[in-house]
Image (cartoon, rainbow, N blue to C red; front, top):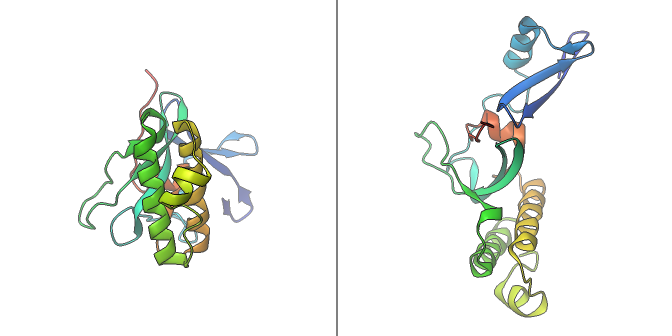
Length: 174
């Protein structure tokens, strides 16, 4: 972030769930944080997660008890203030559910960018038969990030700060 001669970095603290701003000497002054937050040039200012701007199935990285976790989610109606909680990929242990999600992402990718990224039932069951959910989660995360970079009509992936600013809530450490 930049405001005049002042420069700062921002990040989510996964233990507290707080968006922190760090300047050269340490935490930024509250007045400077307000300037950064009100800056109209910030591409994340006013970011939303709803059926108007988000893909039918999208990914996000949020905080949970001191760590970052990858989740998938479906957008809510525009009138709803906050997105739904989403599904944490790592705690879904059934390979069939992950395979179905990836095939669905492949169909959406074909419609959005013209190719399915080989995320189809034939490939996922026969040519690249993953045996565990961790690999499916990694592939889902990467596929949604890639489609997000290739399709500028919808948001397919919310990185931690974008997820926070769009209302995706995590779980703070105890």
